[in-house]
Each structure stands twice: as C-alpha cells, then as structure tokens.
Image (cartoon, rainbow, N blue to C red; front, side, top):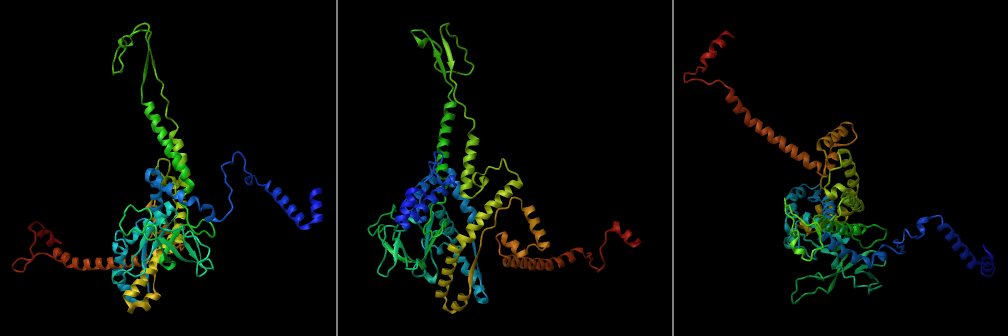
Length: 494
C-alpha cells in the first residue's frame, strides 16, 4: 500500500480494503496475457453477461445472415447437409418397449402412422422427415419449435407441426404477469425459473401468403407441455440457441469472396493480349486486330509488338484447403465429410477422423435430439393412443418408446465386422451391444434370423421329395428298372 492507500485506510478501513483488493486484482491480471487486449488481439470483444444477454441483439442478425449464406453458398449448404445426415440420417427409429402382448401386437400397425404424412399436421412429411427438418432448422437458426395441437387429430391420432424460430413473439417482454410469471423474449417463466408457456405467432410473420384473416402479427400463449423448444445448450442457464454456423460464418463468406476473386483472375489469365506499338500516322494499315492460328504477318521496321503478361493463379488449392479445414473443425465434422475430398487420406486417417466426428455426433444424438425431440414426440404419441383406445391406457402408461439412431458410416465393413466378432469372442463386448452400435435393434435382428431360418427349413422340406424323385431310378412299364445299356455291364460286374 502506498501513502494514499494507508491514509484512506486510516480514515475508512473498508474503502482502504477495497482499494487494496482492486490493486491486487490488477496485479493478478498482469500474469495472464490473454486478459490484456493488445494490438494483435484488437478484434476480441470481452463482454460480461449470460448467454442470452450476449446473444440477444446478435441472434436474429446471425440467423438471417446464415440463411442467406446457406441459400447462395454451396459449401455452407454442404456443411448443413453433413451435420443433418450424420445426426439423423434416414431417420431415428422408434421402438415400443412394453410387457403387454396385446400392445406389442398392435404396435406395427400404429408405427405405420409414423411412416406416413398423417403424423404431420400440415400433411407433407413423415416423422423422420419432420425430425430432419427440425434438426436442420436448429443448425441454421440455432433453434426451432415442434408443437402438439391441443386436440388429437382424426381418430385420436397424434399430429405435430415444426415451426421456425421466427414464430416466437419476442416482442412480448414483461417482468411479471397476473400470476407472477415473467416473460423474456416471448418465453414465460414461473417464479422458480421453469418454462410454463411460449408466446407464438399464429402465422409466420414473414409469410408470402396473405388472406383476409391473416394474423401474422398476432400471437397466442401456448402451454409448455405442448411445445418442444429444440436448441443446443452451450453455456449454463442458456434459454435460447444460436446458429451452429456462427463461428464459421466469416470463413464461409471469405472463402466465397476468394472464389469470386480467383474466378476473375482465371478470366484475366485467359485473356491473351498483344499491344502494337507504331509511329505510323495510319495505324489501321498495320497488323490485324485479331490473332489467328498459324498467322504470319509482316510488320514494318518501326512497328513493335508487346504481349501481355497475365497473372498466374497458383496457390489457390492450399488457401481453400486451409479455410475448409477451419470450417469443418469449427462445426465438429471432418474435412472429408465437408468436401468429399479423399485424395490425401488412407484407411487409418479416415477412421481416426470418423472416430472424432462420431463422438460429436453421438453426443448430439443422445444428449440433444433423442431426449429433447424424439422422446417427447414418443410420449405424445402414446398419450394420443391412450385417448383413442382407453382400454389400453393402463398398459400404455407402463410402456415407453425407445429410439435407435441411424447406423454410423463404416469405412471398411469387412475390417469393422472382424473387430466386432473378435470383441464378442474375447468377452469384451456382447452381441446385442455390437448390433446397437450398427444402429439396429437386437430383438428385431433375432426375430428376422429366426423367421429366415424357419423359411429355410420349410424350403428344405419341400425340396427333399423333389430331389428324391429326381435321384430315384426310372422304371419301365413292366416294373423293371430302366438302365443304360452301356452301363449295364458295369453294374453287373460290380
């Protein structure tokens, strides 16, 4: 403490202590270079606040920018496709788990509804397609909503609707309502901080369809038990999502701009130009204005022809590859999955890359998409089933729907299969566990194998009499065996 600090401490010990603590804190910052903004880190913007406070003003702008880039940038569209294909693939398969035989027998017929467009309130998508749409919207916008209508559809059937983040009426902002709930960004919370309702627009506020009853700027309060708010939580306490492409948006734009510049350089480099220097008063009588193959042109002693030297276009591949690797790394996928470029990989490197990406994909599947999207949809489906068939309510209350992600891509199926067999034989894994890793349900595989074996046995039984009749010696009309005259002697000798 200096003289001033000691003087202040003598008069006001509390103030002196605060000054000493602040001074100690400043000294501690000096030990971390990252805590000081220098010329090299001038682009860093330290900001205090929770996840929603930091993203509040930028969330909408980032979402609109990402949408524009995805619409017009093939690399961005490919990145979104790679993420959605890895997470959802052809669909996350639901499976009923129940101890009731009648319920299990009725499940195949009910499951066909999930594979039809009747599950969609708009009548255009199957359940697998709706999950793909929801995950794609989450990747691009950072969040999306799936709502369950207040009343089941025809015949008590569950129907769902996927909504973009634009449907959230974030104009609704109030600290308290009549029931002491608070509303932030159109999401209503109770006093304990739990979400109790969402304020959603009745129609998309930017819809191109207009009709006399259009209500695009009117919103309604929808209870939280009818809404799935799908977004990735990156920070504790986060209430809304941010586009997954936000960290790589600048790289995507820079790469697209560089592609345009490289294309212009290619056009310029393709322009073979010649410049004719002359002192003649009538330049039109000199060499021709266009060059032709095999042209031999005589020019005067005072004429001079100078050819242009267009710039080269080398180094583009290395530049683009660096940017594409940064984009792939920022999204949590491999460079090969983003670009399809397999020129510099072998089996080992490709497998290592897929393992790292596979960990991200499994995390997104089991901690985000399945528990927060697929499981609530399955619960809603069982609830609508119980409303349609009350006699099964007790069994449906004990039942649950489990979900199996799509099988992961395998670089070398033969090698991967041999490894799985060796692990089973060594007791390091079980057969059901290895089957689940492939994205299949062990019980279904066993049932198919048993059914196939039964069919094979039936075919063998039908085939045996035919083989016996074919192998039996033919008899003539008198009941004597008919033999080939050439082999009769041989038979007699034997």
